[in-house]
Length: 199
Ligand SMILES: *[C@@H]1O[C@H](CO)[C@@H](O)[C@H](O)[C@H]1NC(C)=O
Ligand SMILES: *[C@@H]1O[C@H](CO)[C@@H](O)[C@H](O)[C@H]1NC(C)=O
Ligand SMILES: *[C@@H]1O[C@H](CO)[C@@H](O)[C@H](O)[C@H]1NC(C)=O
Image (cartoon, rainbow, N blue to C red; front, side):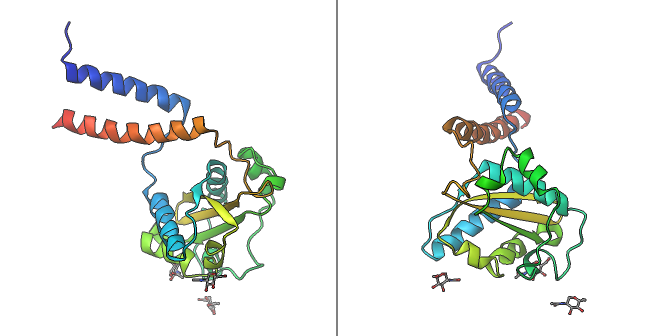
């Protein structure tokens, strides 16, 4: 059987994508996080500050924390409206860190900023970080990295530093970064290929 060239290419793409999926979880559907990431970096550049780079381990922690918040309602005393010093503390925080292969020692200088926005409407989400007390953290040169996690109405930003006490010991070996970048490209190619096949 002779396969048309195009469909052969499609299957090669599909199978290599499947292999990538097995090796590393690739998500194509985290728009609200990407919007916030870009919004925060635009805010930083408007203040002449360096862009924050994505930190996988901080992403992981942000997700775990968002998961803790998810059953809480948005009130004027949670999230971005919290009075500094009254942030909720999770007794299982060390477990959350451990789930992300993190320790207190390499996260101490980081900052965790939860916000609650019904439906995660993107303009409100960004404002909850750039137009609240959190903006002081975003306007701080000591932070160099960022992780974002979300669950239901909650979105959590974790800021990291480039020092051993706040770098979240990212396993940002180039290999891991490359895989996730290649993954994103595959997502797009696959979507395109899928569309041209269906049409
Ligand atoms: C928060 O909301 C409650 C009830 O809606 C209100 O009584 C209280 O004054 C509000 N607190 C602040 C700080 O806005
Ligand atoms: C944050 O989001 C809430 C919705 O949960 C919104 O009412 C509030 O105005 C936002 N805060 C800021 C500073 O934009
Ligand atoms: C950011 O920080 C700088 C220096 O600390 C300060 O001068 C500036 O007003 C801050 N800007 C905002 C928007 O917070």
